[in-house]
Length: 302
Image (cartoon, rainbow, N blue to C red; front, top):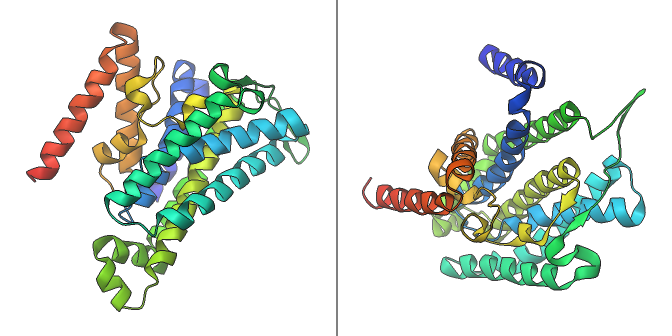
């Protein structure tokens, strides 16, 4: 506990003692939270999703829509983003968790592709290829109002979102619910024979992971004051001119089914992205391919 408190204090001081690292840390917090959501689904429940970015994007777009069309406050906008992610995860999860194996993987991938194509074509509500810019509302707290345009404010908002996500994942993983998730992950037939409702357990994990991803997307949107259709796109690390770090690679790299592993993996990916964008932009996709190859070899030959 003392080490955790020391770490938290050090992280909290970053904007004041190492200002140049602030933006990188914000990206680590938010994309790390995205990786945590996928780890909850894959690492703890054994459901490999290739469309987790859908709920990140729904959280981001829901927040932007609330600000642009409803003139919502910051907390109302974040709530709208979470609601969009929740509804989307419920709709997709209700059908997808009934599939098993590659069927589930294919459904999540097709869902991401369909949402991406819809977002590209629906210019009036998504901005199409150009995306949508907006002015994020201020952070209102009892007796104080803070501008989201101030970098430290964005930093602490992202840090707060990450701590909420870590608390959710830790609370679930150490509870009886976490035991049910791991039972389904290890052997669905045995879990069903023990009395677990496998479909319900999978749906709970899917929806909760979607909400956590939506939280990351919502805070990302107000931090960037911009949303784009590419957030829906699977394999963005390979096909985008400005690649987003792939949360699945981060989970596998940092070790699935652990609390801190996805954050470590995401930190490595963000470091590689900064390195390659500076020295050799096309090299990032190559590096991701090599990492996937190494991970696959390690899984095949433990």
